[in-house]
Structures are given as C-alpha cells and as structure tokens.
Length: 177
Image (tube, rainbow, N blue to C red; front, side):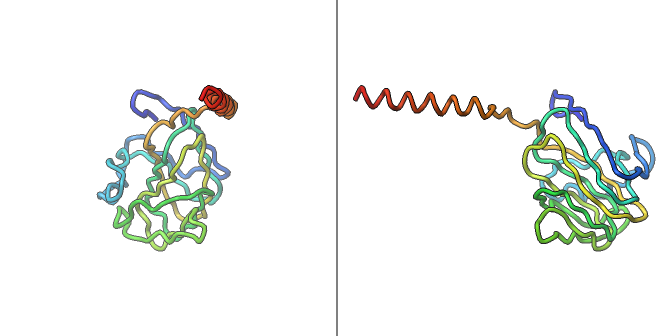
C-alpha cells in the first residue's frame, strides 16, 4: 500500500482459507458509489479485493503504523463481524449484490450484516495491525485504505525526560523570582 510517498507492506494471515484474491482484473464489485457516501473521498480500486467464505480470524500487519483504517465491504450477507476495537459505520447502501444494513453490536466493535451489506467501516486510531473475526457464508469481500501514516509518537522514556526537564526548569525559574 502506498500512502503519499511512503510504501507500507501489508501482511495478511487468516485462520481459514481465503476464497479468492482479485488483483485488478475480473468483475468490479465496488460499484456503485456507496463507498464514497461517507468520509472516504475515493472508492476502492476496481477489481481488487480479498474474498472470504469460511469463518475465522483475519489479521493485517503493517510495516509502519497507520492512521484510521477504512475497510471496504462487499456482500457481507448475514455475517457477524468483530474488529475488537471501536469502529464507525462510514457508509452503506445498495451495492453490486443488493442492499443490507450493518447492525452495530453493543460494544461498537463489530456488526451483523442484515442483508447484503456493501459499504465502509472506519477503525479510528493508530494501528500496527488489525484483526477481525467473521462467520461463514457463500462469500464476502474486503479491501482496506488508510487516512495516512501515523504521526511519530515520542517514546515513553523521552516523555518522562521532557516532563522531568520541564519540572526542573519551572523550579529554577521559581527560585530566580
């Protein structure tokens, strides 16, 4: 995945076999415009997705921390999904296989697909990896996008040193006054 000028490697593992992987050819299931009805400013790349059918756990690991993961969904029919972290339904509506509604679970970490869910969910925050569980069905597909590369966060030790330095600076300033 390329974010600006930064290339980020993505490693996918799954506890069950993948149904298929589209890499730019074949049917474009990412139509119509349901994927841009929310905050995503572009639709998923045509004819690129990972297709699942047997339930299990999927993990995506990134070579660099990323911000706000956008998960494009196609045909999540009667499927139960849990990301284990807060998620927001960004858009949903009529897609290639029809229409459905994502019914968010009580913890806000996943949804049940009532009908053929097509749309986008966002996982807000910084991530080095994401995982989700899903249940079995004929097939359902996904792709990801991100808002950007995560901002550099100082190491906790550096924050402690900064706090210690500011305390010393304040104490020294108080003595001079």
